[in-house]
Length: 462
Image (cartoon, rainbow, N blue to C red; front, side, top):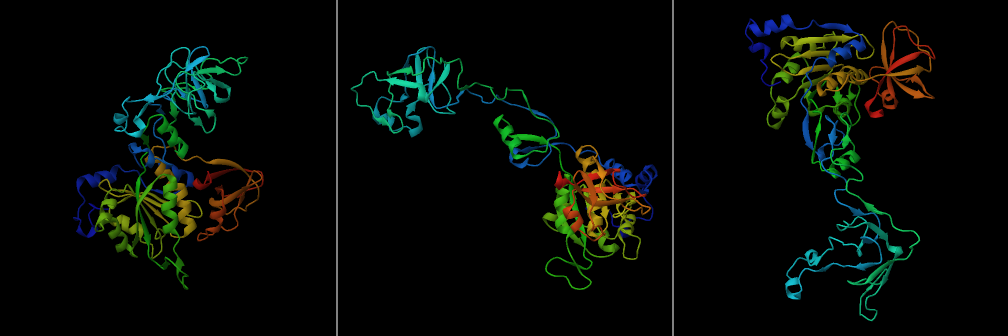
């Protein structure tokens, strides 16, 4: 990342601070169990500070703090049905909106919506027409449903325009009677009172909620413009070039790229933001350059603020495996070097010096990379966002698996309440994971039907 010294430009002797850091750093964990690896990764980052985001940007974010209503809902009394807002006992004198100006010439100078003055207050014995959702005037004691209201004209001979739905339109001074006096109105009947749904200060949403569209609408209705959410760590993804074809049909010795599509999407599901995805030249020099050089333009700004780097490939111990060497040349502290599980045993976790980002190096085979990300990577991101260590499930085995002498973390599906391993679980195979419900943790001594098993939920199946 920017600011890190290139190994060939470094002085022969480390400075005092770096050597002191190495002396106090935790020793590297070699071949940690899958659960130990998760716990180690979870403890690496310091939780990031929460941030406030506008509601429109909060979808699928995690609420960092519980929030309360800024105002009551509704914040004014409204009619729950079409009809008549009435005050006191009937019959009632009808009141209607009146012109804002008695001089028609002055009236025409006003905007159309301001030419009539609404009835804002009723005294006992008065009524005015309202529609569902309208604010009811101050003093309203109930809303009389439209079909119950019978209007008696004050002047039957007056030339009054008709209402297309109800016949003669009620005018100022008409009398409103209740057509069903045997069922007297009760106070606030068909009136949605202030705070009927939510009172100001009521708990609206609890911390830890993954925000959905209805949560955002609820927050808006209660007066919120922004919400406190957990900040996602910023991630740069570095992918290898070797034998990768990004489109079309690959030839012999080539593979179709799948990780550039999967990794950013899964990282997002797990709680991170991917700032950029870059290809890295093969070999140790290519990886060193990717971790130290700033790309030109806007990319350098994104690169400079990354808290995590995720790489793929080159984590083994063969001639072409260069990630470990590159990290050592950069003076990184190896936190985790290998996980005692199949697949994804080649996972490396390291911290670059000078407060550089954490590097999660994943194997290059698709299923290995995804398994490492869903175990170690998920825990790492959870530690950065301040969430708890990702939980596992207990499930009943539905089939036997022979012992292999090592732990397996493999895709599995749930059928009739029992967990069954997917048949295609090779390191490069994705079809099993595509159809899986969980990652099943199979111990070294295998599995028997009816045995209580531990499983890792898949974020897209929650």
